[in-house]
Amino acid sequence: MTTTDLPASLIPTLPGQYYTDPAIFSLEQSHVFEDMWFCAVRSGDLPTPGSFKKVQVGRESVLVVRSRDGQLRAFLNICRHRGAQICTEESGQVKRAFQCPYHAWTYDLEGKLVAAPNLTKMPDIDRVGYGLVSVALREWLGYAWLCLAKEPPSFEDDVVGAIVERLGSVEVIDSYQLDSLAVGRRITYDVQANWKLIIENFMECYHCATIHPELTEVLPEFADGYAAQFFVGHGAEFGDDVKGFTVDGSEGFGKLPGVDDEQDRRYYAITVRPTVFVNLVPDHVIFHRMYPISADRTIVECDWLYSHEVVESGKDVARSVELFHRVNEQDFAACERTQPAMSSRAYANGGVLVPSEHHIGAFHEWLMQRISR
Image 1 (cartoon, rainbow, N blue to C red):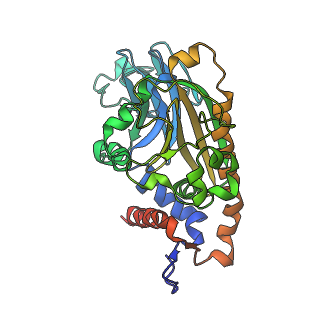
Image 2 (tube, rainbow, N blue to C red):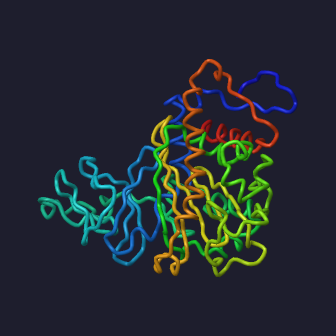
Image 3 (cartoon, rainbow, N blue to C red):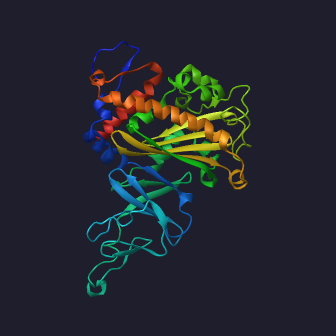
């Protein structure tokens, strides 16, 4: 961080190179995305044995698959023979096995090597030992979280703990029953900006009155510039005349069954490092996952989750989707406006944070500790 003397009201940021330097992005890939729990895929996207999805976690291509016993498993998407990528399609369905398109080494849904040309003439090959390389996987909140580390950190401390730190208890997030909700809409955004700019934007509301007119109409306290997500257990209240978390404040749907009166008419925002945002409102949940591609490009996948009754009945979710879709577009446009300036000499020593953005300074300190390991 910059060592320039600053007024007591201001906090230094990371220098611009932390948003543009491929070498720093490489450190983040190895020490952040590959060493931490990374939210990869919605479990319901893989409904039957043989369903698979390919995801990028740091520098690794990972194959997430529903096995024959109904469990989700994850493997490095690399053939153990000569290293060819086994699956080149983003998602799909196989019957019983994956076959490498190079030399036809074949692996079952549990990752075991089950066939290869002339394999019977090589009886000394351990078919489990030469199976696909497993990746640690945990399911929570209806999503599969992966960790490539040889010794994964505590899921309870790093992931569950982030939720508890924000909401005060795990029972609060449990009441929304995310694992039982259905995807009512999914939008994928290709953002030409560094992943940290997106994180930093989400963590503060200093910009809300400037670029989020629809959001501040629904959540008037956000116009004051303070991010309510950083007060434990506090949810931003809907405006007095607001009926629902919709683009025009009109009525949404009935609150989710587990949501109590204290959570009604409130919005809660949570950041789970490194790349997840969870937004809770009474009748639905908005769940962001980020896939950093390069120092200046990030794919963001956003799910709007509703009760199965809402989705299966074909009810129109457009007004509730539109509110946060506009927020996303406004935020990502701001990040894309900022990205080019990260390489400017004006930002060589970084910028500054005002007091309401102090938690971004804490995020920078955390990041520096991670990549210096």
